[in-house]
Amino acid sequence: MTIRVVIADDQAMVREAFSVLLGAQPDIDVVTTAVDGREAVAAAGELRPDVIVMDIRMPGLDGIEATRQITRQPDLPTKILVLTTFDLDEYVYEALRAGASGFLLKDASGVQLAEAVSTVAAGDALLSPEITKRLITEFSRLSSSPKAPTQVRIDELTNRETEVLTLVARGLSNAEIARELVAEQTVKTHMGSILHKLQLRDRTQAAVFAYETGLVAPGRTHL
Image (tube, rainbow, N blue to C red; front, side):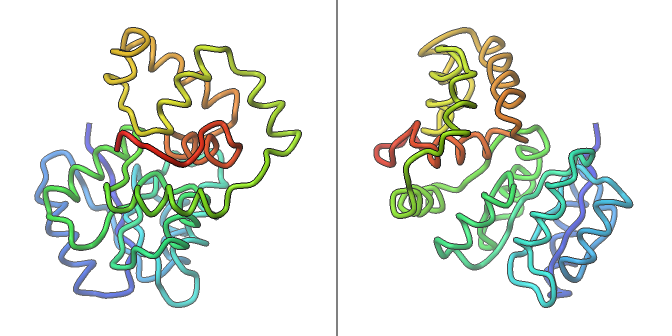
């Protein structure tokens, strides 16, 4: 199946370069480009792409707010891959809270970019190891006590689902979780149930949820 992609970046050279890199992949189709967040939001609504490669710092509507507006639309299947030269903690944290499914620095290779698009399109989380370290630090700094409504949502999970969510937040893949707990296909079933019960879009939001609610404490990670 072809992955339909929109590239949103205010620099023409970046848009053209990424279009060439991704367009050369047999399973990726760059359907359009956007020069800012507003165009990205419009493209999401009109074209319903699978993935938007989203720059963070753009004039007018920035990438974080554009991501937030897109992911708030429950009927849109679009996943957001944030791609930027800026790896500051607040950008990582806010982009993921806004609903981004992955975060990759612009110095990544063309192969890494294509793999990132495929990973995010498949519904998996994607964070580079460097970004993950910063993210864990930010969760540690900003962590607070869970609120009552959130705790009720956690209580809706079964014991096994809670175990799976904990391991997802610590960075384990389905295969790694399966080796510790259950068969890989069963992990996918549990993950689907977790996303449904917690009303989350994907594994990345599930990991954010686990840290923000205190289910997982910042510390040792498998990533």
